[in-house]
Length: 400
Image (tube, rainbow, N blue to C red):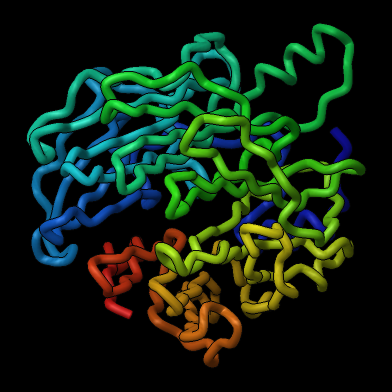
């Protein structure tokens, strides 16, 4: 693989979204700040993370101030991806079941399996984990994302390289990896045979998922377009299991032969009959060696016409702005991201009360010295929360 210029590499490194070789990702962790969280119907906060090779789940009844003793999900220790874009996931079904997925690193370099486990007794115990995919080849199955809709249907997506290897064996060209998904219609008892969502995805960026009112699950991922343009693709996985139709979602035309480890954020726009499309946020490298044109973008995507509004720049790139999260309740939209200033990590926020058509001025929500994770937005009833995991101050949960 061709190397990017030294200057551009250094710029992206300091952005904490460094361009790496395709396969330099998903490291096993003793412990990590990279956690996932979810509220249940009672308002309890559930957390999944990694400790000493085990996926562990605990819960807090006091807004993250204190947690129960962690419960191990896997019986034997594994090499588990828990770093930045790769981390265990947790979701809660409408009936109260807890669902967890994670990536296990295998013996062969840069290979992996996607595991799933569930608890049907409010987190007291977890059933024996199962593989989400039926393909058990020792290849790349990595960067899992987990979604549960209001009907209880579970969708798991991941980055998969079976088609790249098949193309190489046939001496045919192939860019990047692929996105695959599997669905459970029976509350996680079993999963359907996995299906391919798209060829030529980027190799190591998270896949953003959100729900559409009609039961479809929308996915957004960084894609490798012709000429190694690393823009984003979107697709809706229909509720009736018909074939998804991926469509290009961003047009920055960033050309780079490497993986930026900088996935997109996605939220559904409008509710019920008032649904109109999607809110999107993403990073673009800007196509200049010095990195001066790199920026974060927000845009609305009309889900019927698949036409996005003009992209809005946000964030201070001189302060390493990156890793946005976006969430919406009706016409209220929250956009948060991480910056670094004078040795401190900061979480910045903008808010819109007209479905993303206009925004208030950005301001700092929280800051912390030392290592800090990416920001997460969580909804509980009609209240939005920022969750931020930091080495110095622990887990922060702020109503916004």
